[in-house]
Length: 597
Image (cartoon, rainbow, N blue to C red; front, side, top):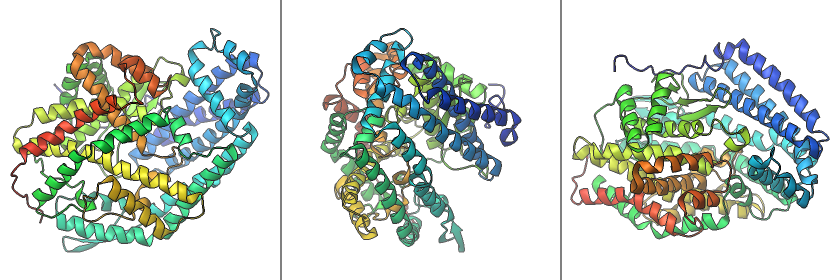
């Protein structure tokens, strides 16, 4: 390659001028006017006008996504960009107005009789959208009258969502004292969290003590926020006549209780390998048992750094072995500067992929520091972008896939590259480091996320009977951790309910099990891909294109001939990911203890 790839993205092709963009402000002004028009159009919507209203809804929805993605990119690339923060607030207000405008739309759907509705869904204009329209109508019929739902949404802005924002404010203002290299420092939560993964065990131990104290000090504030979030949600469910707290998350993820139960049941039967891995890790560290802060700590380090160009070439090459289409897409994403990867101050932490449906483009955000983990993250986010890419020509309503299948293409892409990295490892030490990282992923999805699911399920059952005290929250969390980790750890993290942001996210209730579903669903697909080779490419693309148009059970049955409500598919996926644990255990039969000083 003649020139180095740029590590900064190009947002000017979306809207020129960044947070000062006159073009974007004009876009928002027009969008606000069109949302007002949509509200008028749906105020007394009749059946005959439904196709025109659906076209307007899709137009507004796509533009809201475009606007939301743009401000997310602006805020991520520069956390001090106050103009971007203000624009983000404007977009949130527009989104709330859109939800309110959909009140009349839902009222129209629920006002049509079943027989008449079935006939309407067979008309040429609506047949393609029948699944999502049926889904929306069914959900609307299961909720309160549309006027009350609109009122609840309005009240949620400063109520339900307000508690989530208060939690963010509390976390943003936290400073955790820590002494490092002979100097006392005040660390942000993000900085402190990074040190919990230090290769130095004594440093991890000191950081964990400071970490837990900080969250204990903030526990009353976090407890208030969590109790009020749950209280709002439970009151809303009560007025809808919903008794089961998992009803909404399962509806959102288009999956049945049987599928969720089958997945967790299969995982619980297969945790022995995870226990063995954690016990072996403790042996390597020279300690009786791992503590919470040891679970994600590196076992072996990989010293060799990877350049951004080397990462790009590796990803393109490995994608191409499975799918030429994926490889060509990745080439385009690098060439057209869809990726913000520069390692510089002022960026927000983490990574994401966001889509621009009008431009039929995506943007990927991360910070590339030259680690093998960065390569995996880059592949993961390119998988997200590829997922959106193959859906770009579909109607907006059919591009709205749920969180559990959102991780399908990303995890699949990551598996392709991480497996290749293990096979290409320069030496035994590098191979062990990569295997340990992959085995650690299994522990995360099988144990850590399971403990979150157990905690949240039990917390909501107790919250139905009244406020849950901070002390009881600690007990519930530690009980869930001991159960999920099969009692293998020496010390747990009772304050985890306070420190884990996911419990305070209001856009998705139960922000936990969809991750494990996506991980294993991808692994099951990967198993099929390994069996079938390049002939699987088109079937894989077809599966991705259908993720917004059917339930996960229908998706698996149509494209994989698999029954997700049984254990066979899940077992095949578990077998794929646990091969890494078996190989790690084999290679570390008599491993010397690495330095943890």
